[in-house]
Structures are given as structure tokens and as C-alpha cells.
Image (cartoon, rainbow, N blue to C red; front, top):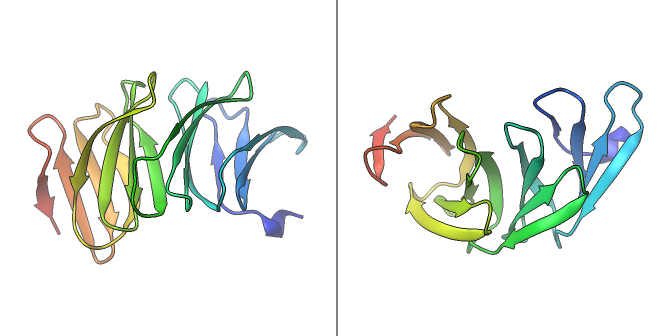
Length: 165
């Protein structure tokens, strides 16, 4: 029953719809509605999902404080990244395809290396939980939506918030 599911995300080529149900991701063919794959590994609810630009990888952010990177064609978990001290809310791939950023309820962003699954660095953007992330198409700017504020990071310049509204 679809009412049991959370948010939905389409692959870049629109060939796959991923929805979450508690701690599972379900990959569905958007044309016929049939279940294609399940991605199971989180120990608590999933709150955010992102596809890589080529659609080959999915990243999932969970209330279990982990970021997981999945290989879509092989239906395989590549990495579990326990980089956060708070439940995660959102995740995004940078355009380079090798870096991913995740945001948590404590106002932290963690940048991780996709091929190795290692955390690279962390930025504290404020006290409010990170609710959304959006990257510019060239990957230079990251908009961070928090409770009551919008922070824009210039990822080329430094690792601190540059504009706060």
C-alpha cells in the first residue's frame, strides 16, 4: 500500500523510482509500478535519498546516523558511513560524482568520499537541523535549508558559511 511509504526520488533518466518504507528503499519501475529491487541495511527510518548524476549510485540518509551508498545495477551496499552524531535528514551528490554531502539534525554537514566511503570534513552551519540541500550545477555553491534560515556555502572559497538569510 503506497500510504505506507515516504518520499520518492526519480533516477536521472526517469527509469527508476525509489521510495522508502521505514528502513528500506524500494526501487520501482515507474512505467508498470513493479518492484525492481530492495535496498535493505539501515537500522532505523530513512529520511533522505539522492541519485548520482549517472544514476548508478543511490545515497540514503538515515535516522540511524549513517549514510549508505548503494550500487544500483548490482543491488549492493558499497559503503556505510557512520559520520554523524545526530540523525540524518538529507543528502546530495556533488557534480564530481566522487563527493557526497549529508546534513543532520544537529546542524552539521559531513562531506564524504564516495569511492572509499571515508568522511573528508565536517562543517557546523548552525544550531538548527539541516532540512534540505541544493547544489549549483557547477558544484561551487551549496544552499543549506535550516530551521528559519538559509545558508549558502561557497565550496571553492572556504569551509564556512558565506551568506546567511
